[in-house]
Image (tube, each protein chain N blue to C red):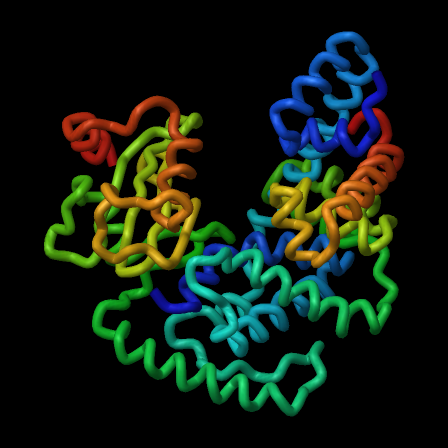
Length: 230
Length: 160
């Protein structure tokens, strides 16, 4: 049986349907050269990711970060690289109108919940406080709701959170800042985890949490103990 | 949450993609800046509930095709030797050397293979998601992926 290179690569990437994957596995078992090829593909992936991860350790260019900071000018300056186009103006106008509407809603509660630590997005302000102190399924009168708390495979403490229509997963190693691992919009806003429809942003978030978790979510006592360790 | 706050956590990913596309740090940082600006201007075209990172990468790539690539500035590697050495000062020298070698190997790939490698291998997008971002059929994606991988394996040697 011959396995073409595309199929073998897809196997190495976990992209095959179960039936085809089985077929490839049988071929690999019978042919050490195929097994070695899969290993080479995976080693290359790891090497590439490792190399690009080195980039993350470098600070973001100040101009880029400033664009997304809370007090940044809403209408961006024309870029050096892009040629100005007439429709840009309408876009900028629309953007400033939209931003004006959003700003009106968000200013009272927005305290800069996201920041950067060495190129890595981290929680700060109200969100960091909630992650540090708040127990699951409570809001403590604040706007952040914590969903589940779990340990990932590296042993880091992770928590799912919701704030308005945004939800995410944050993880922290020991007393380090909370790294934002996932961020999604379009949450229900009711904070409940009970009615997460399949394919909804909440269901996707929970599925991601499950995939990251080593073992079951922490129960109330374990959660409390883990937070004390922070 | 504000659009800016939605986009913020994805900056490292956008920067990695910009570096993979642009091949030299100056162009990559320009591309990242221009991409974020354009994403802000077009924020109303993003549909909440869909992946903002995929959306922003599409913007970044279109921008790169429109401007950076057309300038065809002669860039050799996405990490020149001196920059690699600077990274080595805070990290491991080994990592800097590896980044340099990989940057050089990536830089030799045709752009259409480089972008597939960046999205699938570096960023871990599923084939289907990557094909949607690049607006190409899955079959085209997989054949570019295999050609790109073979070229990288060849350039980096068996050590890869």
